[in-house]
Length: 205
Image 1 (cartoon, rainbow, N blue to C red):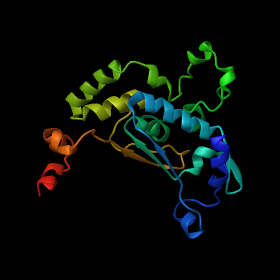
Image 2: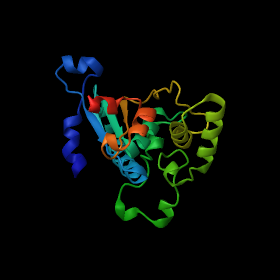
Image 3: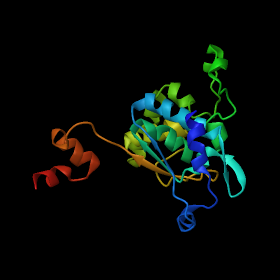
Image 4: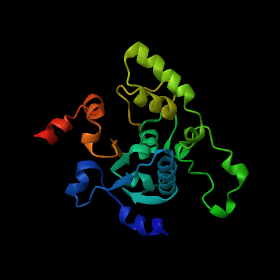
């Protein structure tokens, strides 16, 4: 029901900067944080949009293409990164658009059978191989561990945080955001050494 309410407002006839000139607003999708729980939930929302259609430039397109921006926070970045940067696949494969959409048809057998290129597969696989590979890349290239872990796990062992490319069949631009719980002055060393934002100095002033 929620998709039926939202979709009529996602009809577009122009793209990018031209959209504003033609009187069409830019649309965004915000994906909340919350580790792998949020990743699964946000991926499911994206899957629901991919299974619906809109009309853009006179053609029926997946409703995910209605969004100009997709913003992810923390765990919401997992499906966000996969959707935009995964290679050798397409949006329908990633979001398992051809899969079951009626809850009455869901069985344990279906739940245990995740397509190989589905973005939901990494959600249930061990992080250990990706962590080990990230340590190797860190030792050889000085890569940051956690971003490399996520890229290895979500996008495959050949992925890298250096100069990633948005897939050709993706219409939107990703906004990747992280956060820290609690007041900045409670974590001064972490903020200054890892975030490099000088927050503590600003607060002192």
